Length: 113
Length: 115
Image (cartoon, rainbow over all chains, first blue to last red; front, side):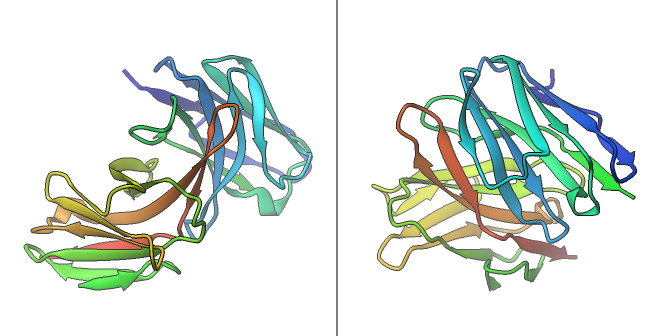
């Protein structure tokens, strides 16, 4: 059973389009995250939700909007896609004080053309 | 072999040798540190962690060393195997009041194991 799953795994779209990436975790964790990994493999946090409440919102353009319908889901919607949005987006979850670290999903490779 | 994980350097080691991957962290208030392994096309996987009240922790074939004085973390892999080839990240955590955590990643080191 996959602990943290994301769909789709690959997403190719044109500039200006709006797209969503979905994430689900079946670990019963309270906290979920979105990370962006650029072409140099640098991982940067974008958002975090704890019990459906937004607790981390880094300097991300407001074209990016996370939505957490319940504790097990954290979706990422991106409006007006730009070339610079091309990256791999990882969803993750954790519980408590991070004993055992974050559980990452397999990633969604977004390519904007 | 050794490397400093401030860019994305490549560390090449012979199969069976020991590997040392280094990392400098930035926040003296960080209280928890984790090493992750990321294989090509996959998400980062937890390897080993260490809390700030410790300076050494051992797992199976891996050891993490923490030097808070100079804000330095290292990962030692004993008897490196081809399956160890991956990008390795250190991460530092600062707990947030009210719950949640902010995990900040280093830039990663590519480990290549030569047969």
